[in-house]
Image (cartoon, rainbow, N blue to C red):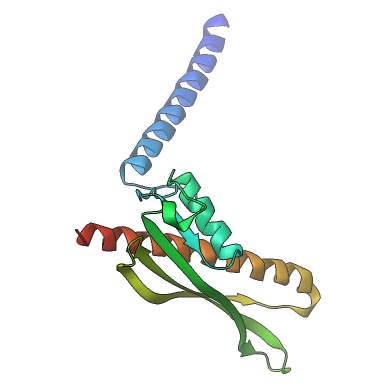
Length: 179
């Protein structure tokens, strides 16, 4: 009787150990192929002291946050900067994407665009005036208006983050090409 109980607990132990081993190797393979959860890792940029010009707003806050995570010094005076990012503007538009058979809106498309330029402290252009944009669509229901408004705000925030990442990748590429 005692030996039977030992075999059962031993089989459970082997099963647990095997499942733990499989989980470990699965995680090892996923990390080895470059898989990361979305938003779990921010690409770091290496930039000289930077000044953000333009109106304070959500785009500037997002860019300032990104630069802080990357440990890029953001200076308060333009004369202290080696690089100036001119945030010219951002625009959010929503348009009807599809209408149901009853004539009610079923889907919207949200379009986000940000215009910027980058120059060195001496005025030399690194990136001329450029507009980056993204768009997303979402379903709409009149019975869930508040939830859909929140969804739209989150989509805009996600697109803003995407544009900031794209802006930084372009800036790094432009700086690596110039002397």
